[in-house]
Image 1 (spheres, rainbow, N blue to C red):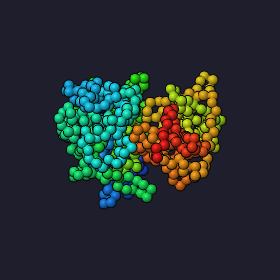
Image 2 (image 1 turned 135 degrees about the horizontal axis):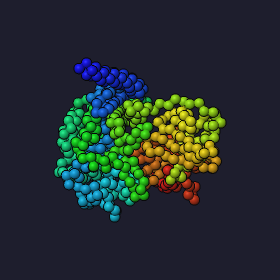
Image 3 (image 1 turned 90 degrees about the vertical axis):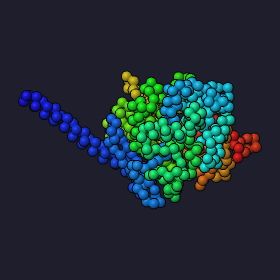
Image 4 (image 1 turned 45 degrees about the vertical axis):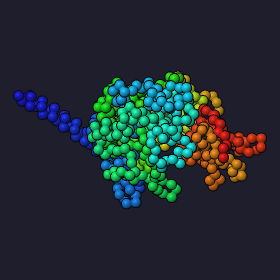
Amino acid sequence: MKTSIFYLLFISGLFLNASIAQTIADKQLTTKFDQLLSDKFKSNETGGTALVARKGQIIYKKAFGMANLELNIPMQTENVFRIGSITKQFTAIAILQLMEQGKLDLQDDITKFIPDYPTHGHKITIEHLLTHTSGIQSYTGMKDFDAISRLDKKPEELIAYFKNQPMEFAPGTKWNYNNSGFFLLGYIIEKVTDKTYQEYVEEKIFKTLGMTQSHYGSDSKIIKNRASAYSKVESGFVNAEPLSMTLPYSAGSLQSTVEDLFKWNQAVHSYKLVNKENLDKAFTSYILADRKKTNYGYGWSLGNIQGSPTIEHGGGIPGFLTMGIYLPVEDVFVAVFSNCDCNGPDEVTAKLAALTIGKPYEYKEFNVDSIVQQKLTGVYEKEGSDEQRFITFKDNQLSSQRNRGEKYKLKPYAKDKYFFESNMTTIEFVKNQSGGVEKLIVKGRQPDEFWIKSNKPIPLIMEIDVDETILDTYVGDYELEPNFILTVTKEKNRLMTQATGQGKIQIFAETETKFFVKVMDAQLEFIKGVSGKVEKLILTQGGRKMDAKKIK
């Protein structure tokens, strides 16, 4: 009896010690979470909400900054945000539910449900819509979308707006993020169920799961705890541009809280909505016709955090940016919402997740001799592409530059391993038996990239000044594709470019006619005709050359 009592006391002590250790660890995590998020969301500026859950239990939930700047209302964890493209998860699950009920098949041609949809001789399937591989043009990228952005439209009216646009590529051959595809899925849900998309989601998902703080977006409806939407300009914060919620529809019109999104994640992964077999398909990378992976399933992106697989999606809509990441192996879920489209939560969400699984993005700088670092320099070429990466060493600093893009500092943290000072990406240099560098591996949130070292010299790219009168001749609109325009403007002797639906980017001259972008791998060349006037530009990006005729 005494032995049994001692054994029970011993076991109880072990559990007690483990519990105390976990409590201490969680307090340390909370401190780190607080620091990351308070740095991200300032107390007197626009704010955000964050939630971290582990093994089905919420271990952290806090709000930062302001929900309303005009009324000086602090953010609360119960605040409701537009979640943007996270809506696509709900649309995908609704489609899978209807498939399980035998009401549709993923290989069905969309003309089965929308008979008058022009497919240009192709078979466009429901699966193509789910995976962004349909080749249909995305309506949010069309030139005049801003002109209709405040107008309420029925689904069939917006479909009529984009359906006659030329195909971008044959279905299943390429991946291109596409809001039109998910808009069509919402309309198919309506045709199959005889309910509106809003009715279906509210009845079959929100009500079923007890997501009482989730709604279909509406400007007129009174929504308790709704956070205000903001953007930022040079002078400071401004109210975000209005957008009719009839336009994002099944591609981005839902509203929710971080806790309701946690309920959603729990329900999805416990198979309350669709079975395991079909859910596994949603979390599997779609394979293109050339056998390349897209790293996207049905409404979810696939990535990793420090080698741990992730299932995730972000959202962006005027005034709001959102992110939700789930790590299935560790059973960790993290969501962060922001009420300013100037302050994206992607990076901080990943860092919170990394801390939770014990794989923080924290690197201690490692001392490496300058001679050793100089031997790493050279031109590296990406496998399966003509992209180049230049590794240079100047002023005792190793740097990486992708083609003519921005140069980033590399800091050593272990032998032949470096981290980018500005993000969560690392580079590992791989050597042969004789000690020479063969290649480098870029490790980040997406699958590893392999870059082979070449014998080519590092090109000398010089930025030059160009006379303002010459710059003036480049100003105008250039048509890359129907309804996709690249606008060139001049601001204080600087040339700026802005593609349809995107922000402005400065371009820099290397000759009088050739320009490059620092923030991405892209180059532009302005071409003159026999008259001496600029007739077009050639955009080179990702190994592709695209002609854009000057139309204005």
